[in-house]
Amino acid sequence: MPLKYYNATLGLIAVNVAVFFIGSYIAPTIYNYMAMNPALVIVRNWWWQIFSYMFVHSGIWHLLFNMLGLFFFGIQLERRVGSSEFLLFYLLSGVLAGAFSLLVYWLTGAYYVWLVGASGAVFAVLLAYATYYPRSTILIFGIIPVKAPVLIVGYAAIEIFRMISPNGGNVAHLTHLAGFGFAYLYLLIRLRINPVREFLDSRR
Image 1: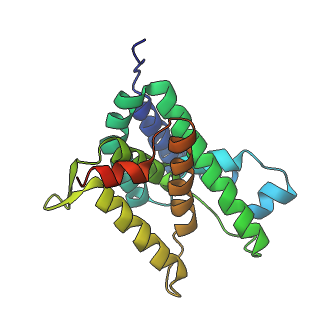
Image 2 (image 1 turned 90 degrees about the vertical axis):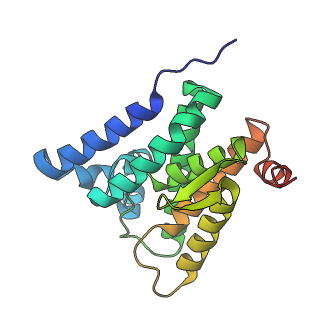
Image 3 (image 1 turned 120 degrees about the vertical axis):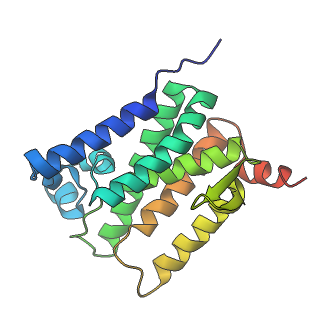
């Protein structure tokens, strides 16, 4: 049976842009309800934030970076696995990355962290794209050619380094890595494809 395709990627981008526009120009308080804060989730039972944080961004560049990644890699992945499967993969990876981050934040006493952005889900899309298209070449800055699996390994190494670095900043590196991790499990368990094996086979 042919896979159904209904532009879920463009729909996700549209929702992210709409939320950013509303939060920036119409109702700024929307961020207080949609961004994920451990204290609000646990104490006030605002559990929807584990889902809604994916659609809130801290600035135009944060939004642009994530949406460009979703556009370039999400459309091709969606055509490969079908729109419904892609949407489930994207949303579930983002929710699980948020839930894992929430658990770590709570256990480490980081009660007042605000987690925003689609990065966890977008990183999941990057891993899935590299898994299905391991021989594809990506031009970094439009100049430097890098194979998709190499880019993924490089991203993971950078995120680990920044996470353990004392000057790591306020970027949610943990959430990015969790996106990779849950994407790997989804691909392995549900879609029956092993990213590591695909990466290694692409070198032959």
